[in-house]
Image (cartoon, rainbow, N blue to C red; front, side):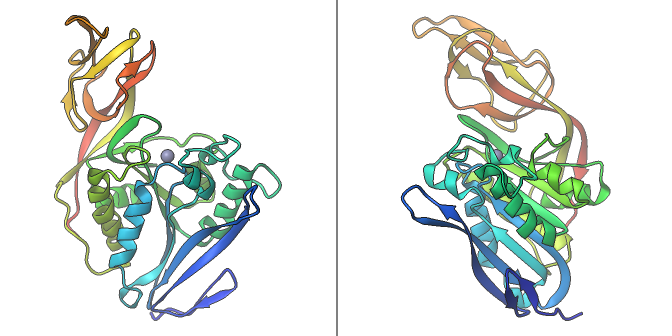
Length: 325
Ligand SMILES: [Zn+2]
């Protein structure tokens, strides 16, 4: 069926067009107004309304590039449904190259937010009211947190068959079923009966090529699986590994950590995965995997203290065949 105009933020957006909008989110101490960019693509045919979001953690900028590249290949005259793209959600953290808001709050622990709370709570509430409320599904792009890099991976409620189908269509190397922590966008979205997948890839303050190369075609395959676009790149992976349990290997002493494995590498329980040593000398303390699985993240900072997270291993439960688009 042909789509009707889309009413959004006081605008009427005609079928087959895209519109750039800005939402005011307040002033900096300098008096400068800050606003959040939103790109709306309204298709010519009826279909779902979905969102694409990036930089909820302000320094996790890889999603900004993934969303830019996805929007560059989409044509609203060839689209069914509507896309609300908000590539820089935590604009305060983004301009400061920080994960947090200026008051050190984590936006992804501030959902569903409130209209009278902290800046993070207000931003979270704005996102819920202006984005989540209009959508049936969202894709939220993240990267590893401070000094960590992640294998491109998806996280979501994979016990839900439709979410699992969309995650399988995305075709990331690994998908992880995980309950959302309290205060996260995922928790707030699920509570409203909507679906969401979280993408993780690369490290903060960098455009990881692997993450961009996984994220752009993966997002397009999800749009295809939702019936919003006719064609999407085929998945080179063939299969996604499904995990329900992951564990960090932690430093058994302080020192200089030499990593012995790479992202995506399979390890067995007890395998050597690196060494922690002193600045001088050949001998060090071997570090071993606590569980078998795939390395999905690791520290990129060799200077470690006792108990620091060194690498993240996901136990593999099953292999999901990718669906050819
Ligand atoms: Zn994040």
